[in-house]
Length: 202
Image 1 (tube, one colour):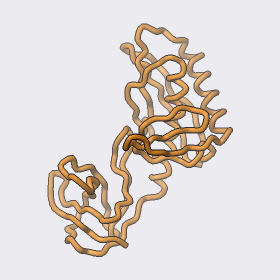
Image 2 (cartoon, rainbow, N blue to C red; image 1 turned 30 degrees about the vertical axis):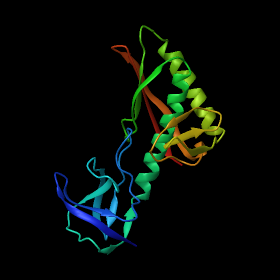
Image 3 (cartoon, rainbow, N blue to C red; image 1 turned 90 degrees about the vertical axis):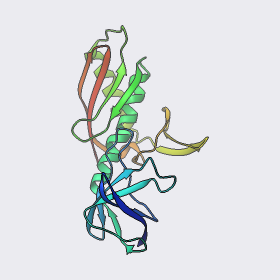
Image 4 (cartoon, rainbow, N blue to C red; image 1 turned 135 degrees about the horizontal axis):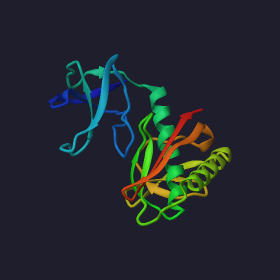
């Protein structure tokens, strides 16, 4: 149980803010959580105007400041998003190790991909795909641990024996929790290498 500490209406419609927020908003290429507050469907969003409690929840019911409520996250969706996001770190690390610079990530189900600057390179795509897929599968089989730490006010996510990156998303505890990994596409267009992948939570 927690309390509603702020509520109002904006372009998102009715919204509320919880004293104890358990919802992760969309960001960093990762979808936001879904869930309920007192069995009313809610979706989290970041309010850039807020100085604290920046995560608010859009909803289809008016709540009042001071209301005592219960909140629940869709656990299956959270786990799936965490698996996709963590796997993105794995693929990203191995592609960067081959000399490509990260541009942007998308960790949404059914469309997960990472884009890199290819520059003037004309890589052998079949060989690149086989290399990245083999290394990623090996890391998953080795069940490498995923950890978080703070550095200069930033949350840093790392994988044992691999790279670390600033990241505010959700992740699995170890790579052994990933299942069904494969690269679904790999292509170069307009100097951009696009690497698509799929994975589920075990």
